[in-house]
Image 1 (cartoon, rainbow over the protein chains, first blue to last red):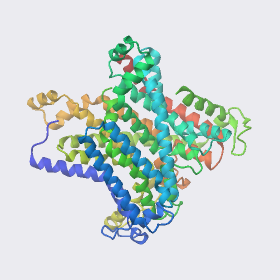
Image 2: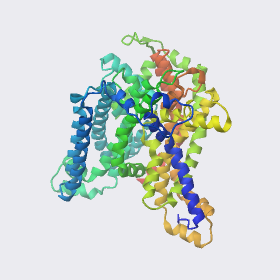
Image 3: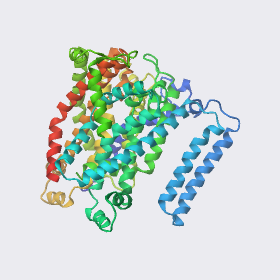
Image 4: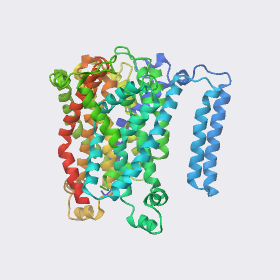
Length: 335
Length: 271
């Protein structure tokens, strides 16, 4: 559409867009404010917008007890983050390959997060966080491994069975979680795997598989057949052609699909809730801060839990927002 | 995919034929179809189905209209500020749904913003009655499913052929006419896609109902999924819950068949 030129119209457009922005973001901003208040301030009947922020809720959530040299540790953490940032800037100048930079940064951050308990006594919430990381990474690796092979096959095989499989994959996406959760629950009880990360990973990979296949197929379809045919003429087997020729071209598509799988796993509530007793992921861990039927729990603590559980994913998305939007549109607009 | 998906489904049908409780996992008793009949004659199950269908009938049109308007407005904004607006609008989609619901619900708690607004402007306290809870579920479902549709519409608007609109505006079509006669027909397939995806997601609505009602039965707002969850955990009858799960799968398939046939035709043509 052509832009509206009329100044009154421009004002109207910016006003109405702010209505939408507020509609979508006010709850989050409000919760963030709540998480920085003391219990008394949060429960006040007239909302407070200006107050002395306190971080006691966060420390109660993450730490068993606050160590004496806490400020030193925080400064070290900030220093490491700044070094990483500088490294990423300098690395670009020195023309180190961007994949290597990303891998180094990612590895350092993961190591840093895993080494936290060596220095500080952490509370339960940290265990949920580690669980979430294990489950998310495991699921992404398994389901992308299977889905890239089958998505590739489906994009190349043009028989009618291929179309039916794709439709089935889409239909399975809409199936209720309960229909999978309960059988997996039963299997877990029989085999003794109930409440283990392994069972959760298998179940989540199964549930997210169809979507990953569907999405990867739409990326694979864009790659011309001639490329792998050329590789096969040169003497590569079909599998070799796939690993050595197709996968390198497909990196953006695979990253996008992994990101989507990651988001879906992170969001999963019901399945993890059914399959675990205490080995929760962050989304499920939220429920213990909800309070009972009548009382509403500790407001600031609940808000702090919500903010801390949402932040890791938000940070990841922040770096890959372009991939996310591309992924949403890839399967839909292009057809 | 076949082993991971079909085997559990088959297992669900199989367990549905047995009487299984939490103490008798290893030796289920065969009871034939009685579990299925029991679910079918349970009025609570049909209430859940009807409520779920009502949610779909309200939320699908509401969120599509909202998302389309938002996308049209966002399309008018240019420059780097657009990225900021888009990111702010996508928040409900990126944040974990359970947390999104917690955050939303907080506004209505006695100390929340909207509750305060109600007290100051209308002089009334918010009471969590059944009607209010149902309205809240409808509003929240719309709120949380809008961003996804927004992204799809927005991408579609970017890809509209420019010359079509230019020639229309030269012919003297005003803005409303342009939208009515060019934009909407061009984006028809996106409207359909959004509808399909929303129906699929709403048919397995669970997270927000679970958090909003905290599974309190006084609200009578069970969807199909929360109904099954209730049977599996509070009544502790796995066989019946599995039978119910199989029945919901059948209901969902019946609802989806027209969409799936459409998709099938499209894929065959594309081939």
